[in-house]
Amino acid sequence: MMIDYGEEGDLTNVADKFGQTPLMLAVLGGHTDCVHFLLEKGALPDAKDKRGSTALHRGVGTSSSSPSSSFTFKNSN
Picture 1 (tube, rainbow, N blue to C red):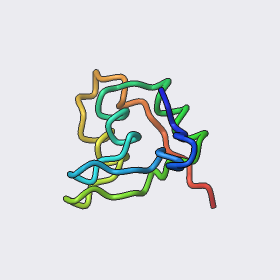
Picture 2: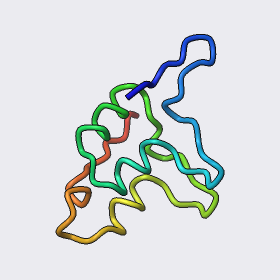
Picture 3: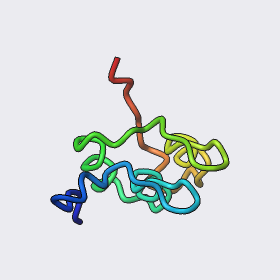
Picture 4: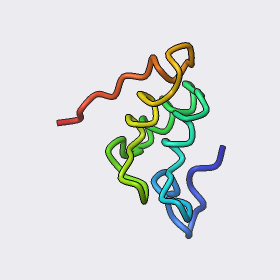
């Protein structure tokens, strides 16, 4: 996974046309390794998409049998 495109800058928190960030998509897909990697790289867990949902909302909104239901987001403050 490429996060840094050199002169184009860090893409960790870049959103698509729906406002979805890589972190949101990783949570939605249940990709725990990617979620941890993105958080370590500075992904913003409280970033909101165009509907006002965050990565945490996506984790809570998935099936309880999904791996993403086990994500815990810690406040960095």
